[in-house]
Image 1: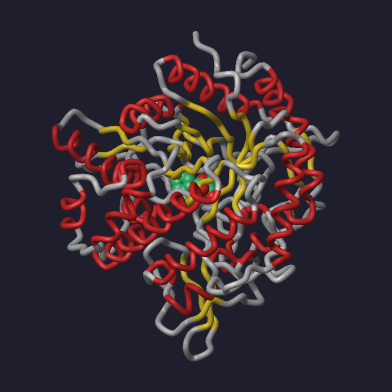
Image 2 (image 1 turned 60 degrees about the vertical axis):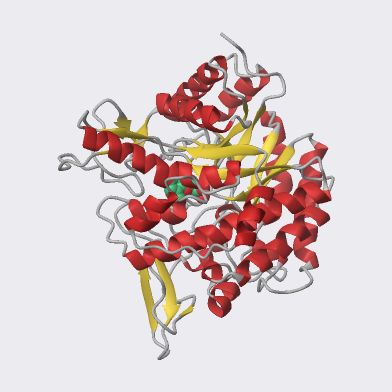
Amino acid sequence: MTSFPKDFLWGGATAAYQFEGAWNEDGRGPAVRDFRTVGTPKKRRQVTYIDKDGHPGMMPAIRGLNLPDGARYAILDNCYYPNHIAVDFYHRYKEDIALLAELGFKVFRMSISWSRLFPKGDEELPNSKGIEFYREVFKELRKYKIEPLVTLWHFDTPVYLEEKYGGWNNRKTIQFFDHYAETCFKEFKGLVRYWITFNEINNAVGMLDMYGSDATDKAYQEAYNQLHYQFLASAHAVKKGHEIDKENVIGCMICGIPHYPLTCDPNDIIATRYRWEKGIFYSGDVQCKGEYPSFSKRLWNEHQVTVDITDQDLIDLKEGVVDMYTFSYYMSNIVTTHEIKDMVAGNIANGERNPYLDYSEWGWANDPKGLRYFLEVIYDRYHLPVMITENGLGAVDKMENDGTIHDDYRIQYMKNHILEMKKAIDHGVNLIGYTMWGCIDLISGGTGQMSKRYGVIYVDRDDEGNGTLNRFKKDSFYWYKKVIETNGENL
Ligand code: P53
């Protein structure tokens, strides 16, 4: 069997708002994600606000739901916001990066917090403390020959842009993002070469499409339009990034969920294909081919959507085609037009349960073959280098009295997925890297829990914010170190 290419980028991935903490330090402005409380798989995270009459309120954090008219994001006294301190990478990055170096990481995926550089989002000059922090982090990574892979937007739009301009509902936000992206390319030139523009960009529409979702046509209208503005912002960033440094490799990032039909009923087959188009190909095609796919009209008509597309936009999209396709992979889902008999009760995961797969405690299907399937479909469609920029198992870990953590379930999960990556490479896919999600335990994006852990490094902190924040190596740490050392041979 073919081995991994010799310069394969092994590593791990994080996102600023789930990892850095220091949410209001050194001039950082608040971002929309800072106003989410902690949840559980059954109880959704809440977004907290003060309404137009000055009363505190909260509502579930669901894509497509907006704050009540006139309300403003607010921190409430009786709520816990896990992202404020997160796991404190902001103050511990030296210790953390030393651990990543010990693992032998070739690449480390992290995101820049937009509001750390531009606290409001529409400023001309960036916050120098923010620039300084990221520069130090990148230098520290380079010291160990770890290549940073930097996401510009990981769901964390500055709140000021949201409240003053309506965020991504407003075309103006593109211009603020353009300025932010250009600032990053200039300030971090020579330190960063690998970039991702928007994390899981396809979720804008994808998250509205869950079973039982009662998303309205208005929500779809907003989502498709927001997506268009983000496509443009991404395309501008790609073009500018290449102009500033031709060494830059800039990718899209897609939430990669393969969909399977439940039955061979042609209705199920077609529904499955349409689900791929809506959820996966729509965004990938725009970012990798630089134009809207032929099926776009059908998707827009489905919800009476009119997207605000100008002639210049079409040129911009063409000029901002990405260099690589990156995606997250956690699970597959099932599509059916028939009655659902056995519903998966997970957050995000949804639809009929797949009897051939087992499920995580959060209801996510464990499907290593689905990763190969996805890789092969995507590479065949775009012929661009592909990178898996998130993958892993969210699970409850138990620390023994001697500080060890025996997470063999995580080792199994990663091993099985890496074996399928190997097969995909063998089948011709140009897979260039793998960054497992949450290499150092961090706050779950979906539930806000600390107890949904992905890391090979354990962080002592619980769902209420207690704990020393000290780091411990799990069994998977030693295992992954060996995988990297042997370039994927010793699994
Ligand atoms: P948590 C949807 C489906 C799959 C992954 O998720 C998703 C989403 C959108 O939330 O998110 C990505 O922490 C995301 C990360 C997140 C990770 O998956 O809910 O890019 O920020 O932490 C894992 O278990």
